[in-house]
Image (cartoon, rainbow over all chains, first blue to last red; front, side, top):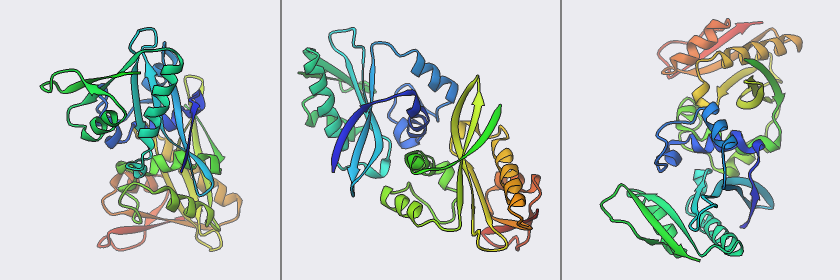
Length: 153
Length: 153
């Protein structure tokens, strides 16, 4: 499997909305508990600031396709927040999100950030394992519903 | 709301996969009971014959977006099979599927077909009402899990 990352554009909005409207995806988003409404999705897109979004593109059987999204927000701070999801849920478990996190930490290093953070729901063990595998460490209490994770870049 | 229909292309495959992987959408597909796997999706696309697929495109607030799919299969027969779904599930109930069915019955009339059919799951009351509204009539027994509907064009 080959993997690449291209900047998301307004042409990707329908695909992002469809991915983020799947219950197994938005279940892990603290700010969302139902399928997205287009107007809210568009407003989110148009009001983004200090944030970058990429589409994860993979190649299997000599064909490229879009499978998910990786992002970094709060770029005006010293500790930007990283997020990732694989929207093509039948491709979970293939290492795609790991590669995407390595891509984003490399990108942040190149931009001279010294650390990054992530928020992960307490019940999202898969993401906890994923972020810990690439070097994030939990810094908040295990009592909270959402854990704060940090990485030194 | 304005609505148009454009032929689906290979560039739409990720969006079609994402829509068809939502449980509230595939729940009504007799041949599918879980999220789609890319390889199967691609194989379906490449092996299509005597079939046409369109993307439903709507315009609200002066912006166009893709929201679903309408199709017709078995075009080599005298009674092609019509199918429709709105993948953007937060836009259900806005008359989009009704407009799509009217589009496809008009298209079939222009191609000189005299009738068309549809299969609808017994528990899918929304689709039953939708197809009956545009002129389809149930022709199979109400005992079966999937009902056969017919329209004279």
